[in-house]
Length: 404
Image (cartoon, rainbow, N blue to C red; front, side):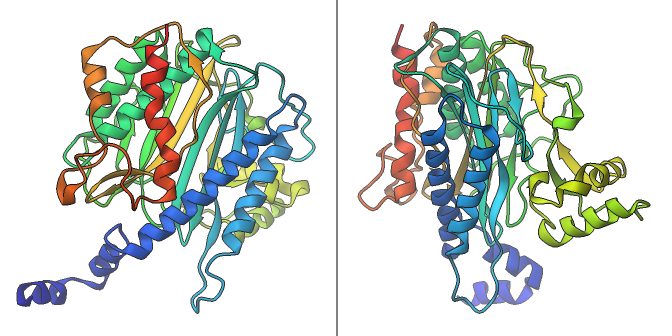
């Protein structure tokens, strides 16, 4: 005890606070899991409403409202005010649209029968963030053909990533593995997608996994460590995996660049930037949530001077199919705890995975041998609801890859 006491006395306040605000603190774990439970429910809510002729903007707004309402009911009686709400605005990107489609009010875009729908959202409690993305095809019965291939590729890559994002492993191991999985389904991992470490109020931490390595994209080598949290983000395509920005006007999601300053010239820009600074000082937000009359004009100057980081709407070529799976994983001492997910539709892909290396990755457990957690792959009696919800996804690769 005396050595521990000395260590604590020599730690700075900042180090002590950092230590207290990671997964060694049970309250932090509770907040992550609380945010995860809400975002999982919001995803279920949207999926239930994903029907032909449903307006995309209405679905996005419904999910964001649900997250605000559910988080608003938590931690009401605490003395210190706790920030909570949407950590990433709901996006619904269809078919060859890769990501970040979250239209403004008045947009008339609707879902159609047969659409491949990608839903992406995030929630936070006290800055502890849970994100999720899921792909669903608007149809009855099993998903077949190339649509099944591209979803199975994303799901199997996500399952492999879950097993490789563990203490001691390197980020480049994950990048190489998920590209190999996608190739087994004759698909590509979409370039430019990053899986980020997350910390309190930080959705895009410095430790990252690069999905697809390319000549223009490099990241620092990093090793995963116990008590870290990651958003694992997998996007697969039947096309080239090199998405393009087609129309800047489609961009509606931004994040305040906290390290940048500039004296804005236009009154509209100053008005909008003041509103953003008050309402969304840290987390990404949708322009839907701002004073719409001035928003277009004001945001342009803010973006031009790097005060806001845009999340552009990207597209593959027409006819290409894109799938997206994202989940939040807590690297706890007894193993990896995937806290966000949703079960897939039945898939009947045209490809089967016979590669022994991929099969070996999928056979790895997600629990470590510490504290007796390594013997069973599935949850123990005391497992949380979040763990139980994640189980159908654990089983998906075997069913998806064994069907011919």
